[in-house]
Length: 408
Image 1 (cartoon, one colour):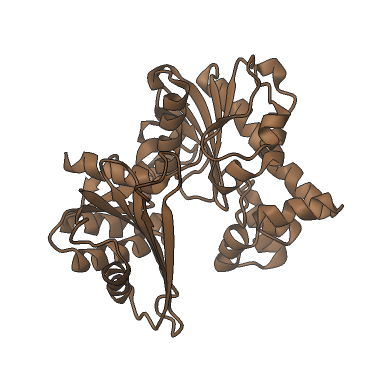
Image 2 (tube, rainbow, N blue to C red):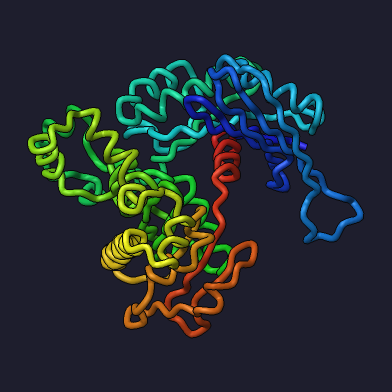
């Protein structure tokens, strides 16, 4: 039973999943966190199928918690290997044929899943100036994983790769061309693995050819982005050179007049680091309402909190702004998809994004939208010209698929 181990590494933590290549079933998953802290911790989960269970019955889940000091990512991988050895599934019986790694920024250099070599690692490090919070951490995970699994290929799957099909008119910023080229200033886009997985899953669910569909996908979580997908190809997306541009997010501002930064520097005396912290960590829902969690914002708004109400209104306004813009970019629309934590679980946000757009062919079914059921579901009416879907994302499975494709 061939498997792929998928790793998503951060600066002080990493997540992993062991995925059966043939059935695409998750056999195990886990989180190693607080790396470098005295109070390190790990969680390991295994999933087994009861042979007497029905086809649609969920797997049996077992969970173990481990607490110990984890000095670095290499030590973290040792903890992960111990968890597999002690609690299963066995990495001998389910030996990974490869390890797939999420890498946030591939710049212009990486437009497809890529087998990791020393040169690839040098390039990932070089591109780190475009994603200083992400690429160095992704590279740490790759290095540690190579030490833990030295005899199998490692594949880097880039968040930006799906958006390499965006035309120059959409990715070019209107600034000095030579300066932009020298410093690699352009739109790259992110959440590419999710947008790719979700748009393909939507076409399969509707039993319609992917190449014939015009889709707008909203990946709405703590980070959020919109993507215009034409025939399975990204043609525009809301995030830009970094994941800061675009929609309102948990702590990130999204779209902003650049002159606001000059104004705050002159009038409020904010320096470079303070402005960076403001826009990335103290803005978005948090800046508007005092909390970056959409659930808390929604609850507060329902209780009459005016700041929370405004935060929801600003969020929804921005969603509608991009929906309209991408409908124009696509020249028509077949499907609107909502995915990720907020997109899959916040009916109020979904309803607000498409409310009153019947004239554009988007007719929401309020009861379907309010009903929570697992899996892909239609939340538009049967006679709506544009189908509105909720599609659970699975970036780890998409990384596993692309890893196998890279080896093929």
